[in-house]
Image 1 (tube, rainbow, N blue to C red):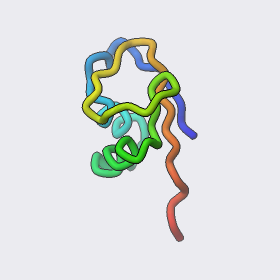
Image 2: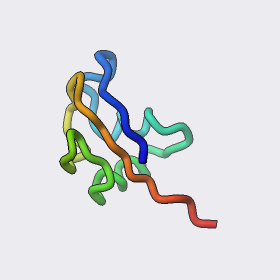
Image 3: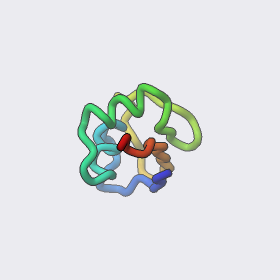
Length: 68
């Protein structure tokens, strides 16, 4: 589980973009898929990938382990 708080510089960005930027090596497509599957929450609630995040919100990403 990866969790972080939205900083002022990230405010107003789309949720899928913030997720993509937060995890090194994650593709934008993977970020969108995780959001669509409900594996990304904002303040404990699943949200749409197009949501614009606000400073102080808490984002949690449940990224499954890579398949061998």
